[in-house]
Image 1 (cartoon, rainbow, N blue to C red):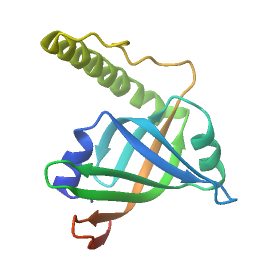
Image 2: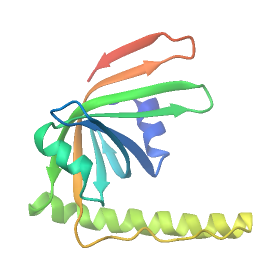
Image 3: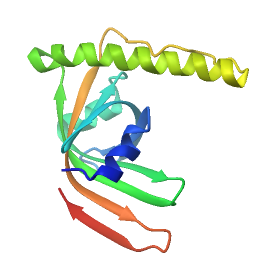
Image 4: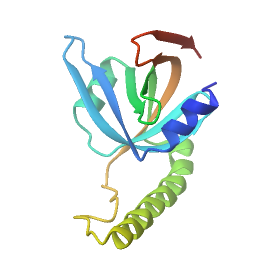
Length: 154
């Protein structure tokens, strides 16, 4: 299970970068919309059916990374992806996705009003085709500012 600190750090983000690699060792990193975190799974939405999706078809391993800007501790999360693009689980997730999109759009409008700044786009749109990346977390790596690493199998 993902520990509480890491879970809270992930949930504080709207988007998280996902790194994939094809069979020829060509890397790809792209931001994905964070839907939710449950126990040892992270659910992301892939709105652009492109290189990430293609890579995952042949190599389901991913790496996510982010940093706690307060402590300057970095984290790398490694795992394996199941692509959810149809069926009961997909349909069940759609309502959660709609609610998350509404929450983000509302937050962006409020943030713009408070700061007196207009965003170029307030809404997170849903293209006709998207998939859910269900990541089974296998390892969490903590990267300290001193350069020391701590690896934890999940």
